[in-house]
Image (cartoon, rainbow, N blue to C red; front, side, top):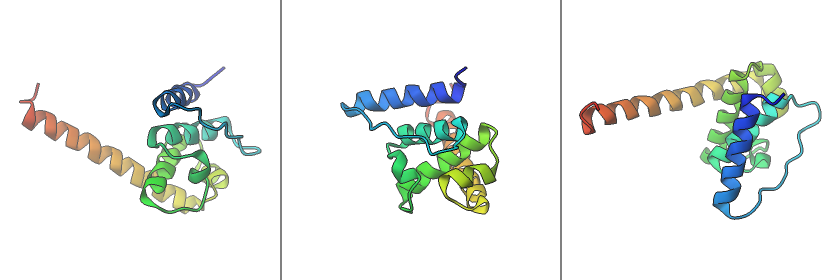
Length: 125
């Protein structure tokens, strides 16, 4: 049975393929990587427009780091521990924990800005 995370990852990948006008390379799942973590990485890849290889790589540029942190958050929300996530993303569990907190803060800030915009600019409708 396909989990909702996997379905969402597949939908996002298909959307990204269509918008880019070309196929994304099929990325092989790391040996022993739980489906949920792999689906989270693919979902973050599609949303942020960052290749899976970059999320799993060493690059620390802001765009790639944000995508990596989003993948950590998605995988954690899917029930994986920071140890499991770190093992497959190639990071220490404390780094994974920091990434989850950073991604949550960005999400909370975005939601708060949206609420403020809606109430001030649109008259609360």
